[in-house]
Image 1 (cartoon, rainbow, N blue to C red):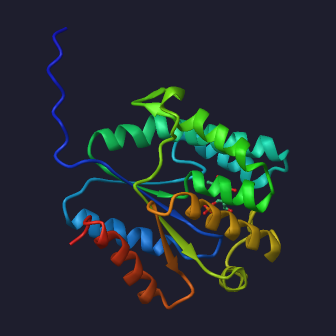
Image 2 (image 1 turned 45 degrees about the vertical axis):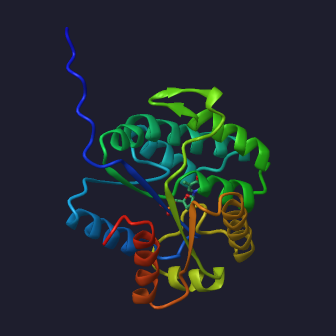
Image 3 (image 1 turned 120 degrees about the vertical axis):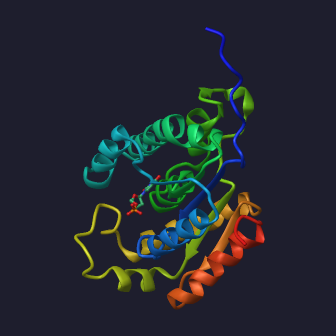
Amino acid sequence: MTGAAATPPAAPGLFISFEGIDGAGKSTHIEALAERLRAQGRVLVNTREPGGTALGEKLRELVLHDAMEPLTEALLMFAARREHVARVIVPALAAGQVVLCDRFADATFAYQGGGRGFDWRTLQQLELLALATQGLEPDLSRNSPLQPDLTLWFDLPPAVAAARLAGARVPDKFEAQPAAFFEAVRAGYARRQAEAPARFARIDADQPREAVWRAVEAAVRGRGWIA
Ligand code: TMP
């Protein structure tokens, strides 16, 4: 077969992740940002972790509801992520699409590293193993895992998040954790931000929804991705 050269995408792919403790209120802003980007003619992939593929969604059910060893939990998060990156995220970015991802690798550092107290360096090794890719192939020689272009971290005190969640739904394994766990998760996010400050925009999520949305808009507009 004489393969015609692939047409390069009209716009470069864009990868934005959304992070924060449970109850931070990411969802409505993900939807609103998706609308804005669609209105500018971008093709969107709206996805989440753990999940985003058929296998990832099965793993999600397990990790959110079954008790397991901390390393097992971390491995399953990265296993689901590996599938997601290889089957959904990398192909979408290669096609010039915008990937909006509700949680990505920072969540593993925050929840399994910060919250559970799992070794940070081991998580970095797993991240490299699962996410150092050249196209779709794992490539450890790259020595740097795939990262979002921008991570919007919805930050707020755990007590405020807990009050928002109270009675909203039956809590999963993580949502049922005490306030001290979420303090540690929050510290995990702060550590990830300190390690990659240019990638992060910290959004003060302890404000009325409109003000939070204006902060989200400002972060994305500041990078020139919306008008
Ligand atoms: P969600 O409720 O935002 O969909 O996220 C599912 C839960 O899984 C949430 O409590 C955070 C947790 N989680 C981890 O512990 N580690 C991870 O790597 C990810 C992606 C989520």
